[in-house]
Image (tube, rainbow, N blue to C red; front, side, top):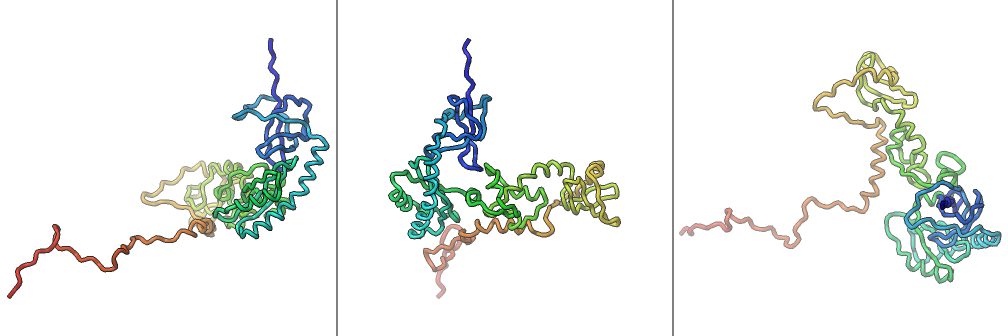
Length: 343
């Protein structure tokens, strides 16, 4: 009876806090977490660190798994260190050449050599939506660092913050993206609203200028805690009568209600659910708006970039072919018939 060997898949990470990529290592059964291996990637041959070993069957990607070439030798590790020492010089030379070409919106962030020096990748970011012509810059870098194949690759503002590191907006010595975040999640303003966080742009944006990644950390907890609780400014029925919700505490499961002739009282989720909602009057549409107006301020700030560069068009385009007004024609059919001249 034939036995099929189980494929050994390993997860390889190429930076300290980077995304994990999977490779086939069936021919290297002795691999352990922490070993350095040589693999072929889209950016040439690279040395990565084994972050996980998976012996269970996995669904292969389109095209199959790429194999692990071999274990990295001490000579390979030393060779990579020698090329890494040159990366800072590449950044300085590229910045100087970009200034000479007057590429004002270009920001050269970092440079990465493959471990054997055959490929050089220069990472950059741009400010604004305008496209920057980098043909001359790439040709100059190619001539300067030949025979290595030079590639210019654009990265986003969050990737820039991750590479540069530094203190976070919350006061942590190292930002979350530089400590443990391997992938960036999709963040929306709704996450801040759900948690009752101030919507002032300076309060919810990180050092990268984008919404903070930490807004998603407790989002699911708040969504679950808000189930069964009314929204702020909503009129609800309570054991003491009908009132208006002025504050909601999702984690405590309580709401504060302003009841006429009674005052402000606090109720639990169970007490609110025991009473049915009052009927909504016909023709009345209930709206929700923060009392501080911070939500409207934030939306106005986010619209500014879209409004710039879009000139206001007149409601009616004027006809510039002739500056003289046209004469009105008489009657429905065409010219007006004139009567006989009086003597």
